[in-house]
Image (cartoon, rainbow, N blue to C red; front, side):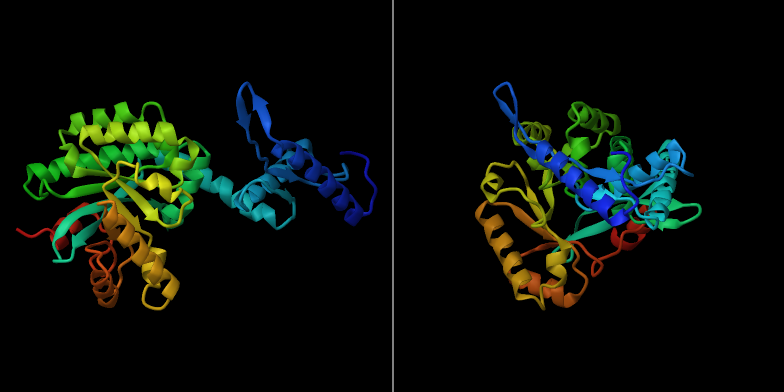
Length: 345
């Protein structure tokens, strides 16, 4: 849009009207042969008068607004505001640092114990940690979504799998890892969908000579939304290898319960958001009850995440949950501390 008037409020109204028409056109169902294609759009825009700003600066502002639209849940629109620039610059800085960390393998794996109702170790979850030289530790909740968006998550995921299996192999040889224990490894939906994921998994198991039964891949419900048929085929192939499968953060996604009975999974992990308020929120308690009952009916194990106090542990045990992970049992720690704190001869 060009040659608008000097009334900024009127200009913004015109832009909003134009954007609404574009987004409406995108949302209309398209036909591709016998298939229906659904498209959504995220749009960013900026207003300029042409006096001072260069083409590069204008495009950067529009791109910054686009990032804001994506952060707001996608399928939406944002108009550039000056205060957005600091957020955009921080994002760019994060991307550069993440590329550097991925190239030079600056990540570390910490391990958090998983236990049963007899306070016996049943395994651990491998959790990635990144300590930036300037900013210190950066939460995975912050950098993993960025890694997914800029295409680094597959490389990072392969590093995590290689590192965690290498660690299990070492502990097995040293007699510090019981063959009945499982190492839980998170798999991004983007990584899981890669055509080469299954061969890569097989290759890693063979390379490290780790028994498949020692590995538990954690996937999310949302992964099933993309292509259920292909996902199911890959899940069955993984199970044929002898690898365990868990649904992580269960209850926070959007998968239909009718599919749950067809999934070849061994365990549901109840999201910590439900466990945290289990004692004070009747709705959360009802959800936990329902998940446990449903899992028992389907012969699926349940592990509760975020168990932080004895009272939480005791209540979970009362209602039929017998596997746990959380600060009450142990924080994520480096490998040498994991052995020292949680593994007993």
